[in-house]
Length: 357
Ligand code: SF4
Image 1 (cartoon, rainbow, N blue to C red):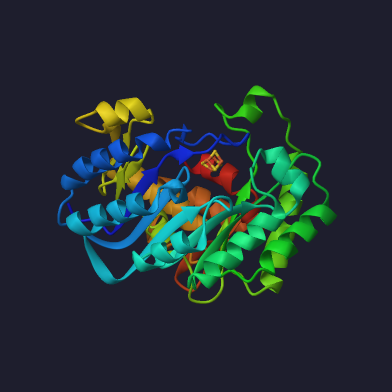
Image 2 (image 1 turned 90 degrees about the vertical axis):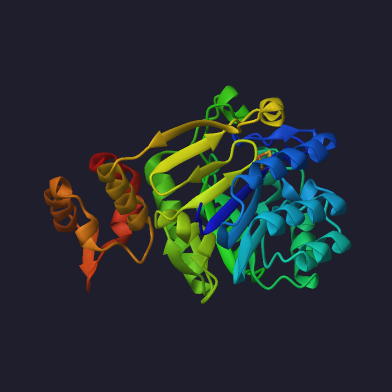
């Protein structure tokens, strides 16, 4: 199979954060050896695929030991061919990584590093159920820099219940001033299967959150972060190629528990249960085949999330008049040969998307 991107899911976490609804396995790192064996088997089916990007996410990939990380990269290099400038990202949490491990990740070929900071406000970190505090987050950032990483992403979360504009501004400025090359913005949502959902945590109203979103965008601009997707910001030359491949409708392979993949017309997903994944001979638990009309709509929806917009010819004929309405109402605009989302449109993009489907 030809693919340009590979996602590998490492599900292990020390505990479950209160907002989390990802496919994870808590306190199960003693099963990492079996997990890597299963990944090895799964990867064989894709032998020879050429990759421009590799993303190791989780869960907490940095919980793997030095030997396990070596084995993981051995699997990647054995079964896949990597382009010379392959973008190789690994995620980590601020707690639990030392400098030798960070240096090893660099030696293994990772050239992009993503740190799950979320906030530098200790009260909100506690609210989220994170195990690190602001001091640890800053220390971790410095450690990865010292290990030689020149392309670092930080995750930034906002829209905590009752978060004031002043708190938001202080937090965003603190994170932006660390000096990373990339920031991924997450709006707190209450997802089914999260502890927050069970606790019936209530979020602030949409207008307030939209105002906060705009504030974040404005502040990040001041710090030299260019927005290139609705939730992603980078310094010049540091946009995430891996994520752009997703948004442009490119193919990708997903390996590991709960991972998703896309062949160009089929989307598939692996079982999200650790034991089932380890026991399986076929990890794929389900798939959907997308017809041309659905693929076209998806390309439009994902494309409009990006600042580069889309070629208007991608808009299916039955949706053209609706698109024209959105342009007249100021949610979309044409710039040169591209159709793009306006600032106003970004605030209601989910709603526009629902009407387009
Ligand atoms: S938010 Fe991240 S660190 Fe926390 S439980 Fe979920 S995957 Fe693990």
